[in-house]
Length: 201
Image 1 (cartoon, rainbow, N blue to C red):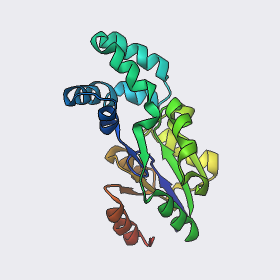
Image 2 (image 1 turned 135 degrees about the vertical axis):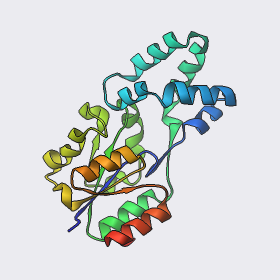
Image 3 (image 1 turned 180 degrees about the vertical axis):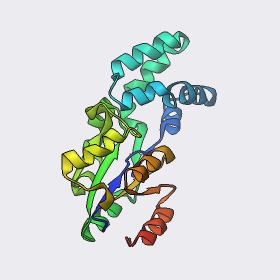
Image 4 (image 1 turned 90 degrees about the vertical axis):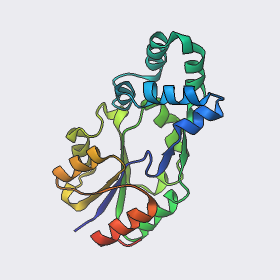
């Protein structure tokens, strides 16, 4: 019996709009792609998620790595709060699941400073029963250890959970631990997939 719905945050309930953000900063398309490939989509960014490094160290690291873009890297981090935007459906989705009797949690890979900046602004967060932020726990998906925190921190049984994430590796780990899992590709597809499980939005 499914009792709990576990959401990833980035690109599920919140749009990680890093390319648009850099365009807002006035970066050229060439620089947007360079920063995307060499900063955002790198193992080092995953280290931010895992709490292994912090933002100050990240700025220093990338400025040393790419000294020709020292000012642009400083600018990139100066307005970093603008790098996400909550999806319009997010609050209603969480609220509807709560009204249907489910417990709702978040299990998210998220850098420490960004979580401090962003999470207080998420309108769906007050409706959630709890959340786990990777950088705060010093472990990130798809490491099974962060999924087991759902058991130890909230007393959940993983087989009673549905896990929703946009990354296949994270979904696969959830399934291997006995959770039902849905790879998120959009709200309409999510509604269809949850319907198959017996969860009707």
